[in-house]
Image 1 (spheres, helix red, strand yellow):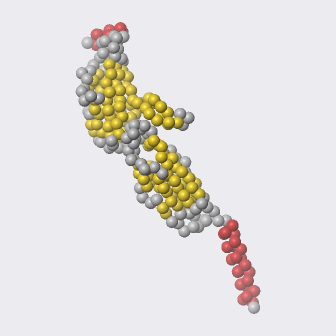
Image 2: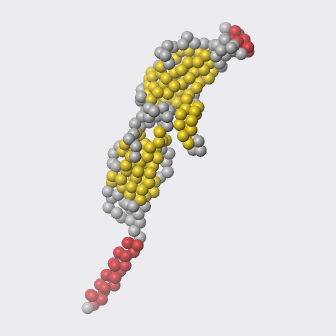
Image 3: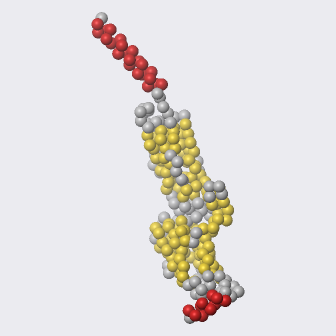
Length: 243
């Protein structure tokens, strides 16, 4: 009987512990805030979140894919909270405008939808783009935009700088290079690039001139307009002095 009297309190304590563990059962699905905004030729991103439970990720648009695990099973343990990352693969955006997709993440009885924004623009740092139409003006998300490089009549050099994920090329609209504008290169490799422009001074006081270039990479085409302003009187004098 002595042993029995000792065991009874221990059994009671174990039951109490089991009850407390059940009371402390915790389930959670907490996305980590991140900006899922891609340029048109960017094809990878990820969604990150915390959870105690197994989870499933499902793309809700046909241009988004899961690159790796879309489902993971965890043995539930309220003392272990897992940091999870879902890697996304995205098709290049060749539509010419911004598109919005999403990924549904579910865990236990919870879920959240992660939006993914892919711009219709390549990552051109110079010239900066000008917005024609806003997808979301409050959050400054452009829908349709264009690039324009404007030079004064006597300016003789400029550049177009960009970062692309794959090889690129630049073509003149119509296939003909104008006699007043020359490029130092018309194609190249992925990464950061600068194409240098040489311009002939414009001596026409009434008329400016314009050329349209197409920057192409990963099947994405962005047009860049190069504008040279008409000469003012002081510009004409400046050009004559230079000559």
